[in-house]
Image 1: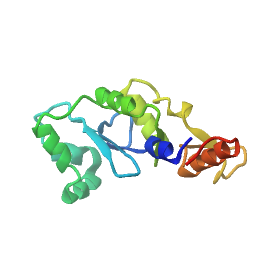
Image 2: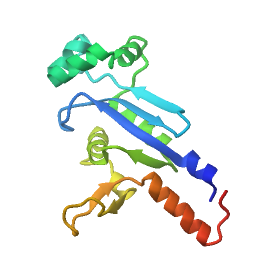
Image 3: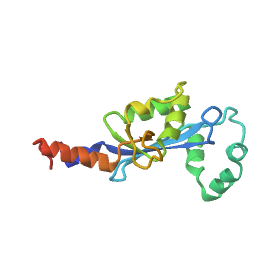
Image 4: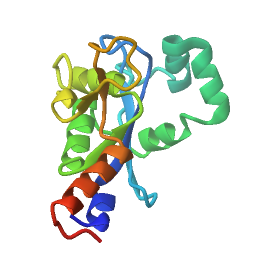
Length: 171
């Protein structure tokens, strides 16, 4: 195992949604970035009725939060992609994301949130991310409670140390 191999596997995943409820809200953007700043982002038009103004739609879904995001230009890239026809359906967006995540070590800020939304887009209760994440008790209020957490840089570095201790070639 080489440091270069770990760097090539490590990515950060982030989704943007129209709200906080995976039952009624939609994913409108998924982005993946590696430690070198190389990224991929794809968009989905969250509106069922495409004649509705995007800003009005977002304000209806998220109220004041959306108004602040509009002022910051947070939806500008989405609007450009909608105008150019460079959007896919929500399910295709999630499937495209998973195809890019094969053999990657994924860092996610809020794994439970993303898991529910990604799974919802696939018609599941969750996206099965728990199958690829580790559990730890660091920070838990009860020693019996396990926190759902993605592999961290620290976990990856621990794997490197373990591999090095086993005589694996690490550079």
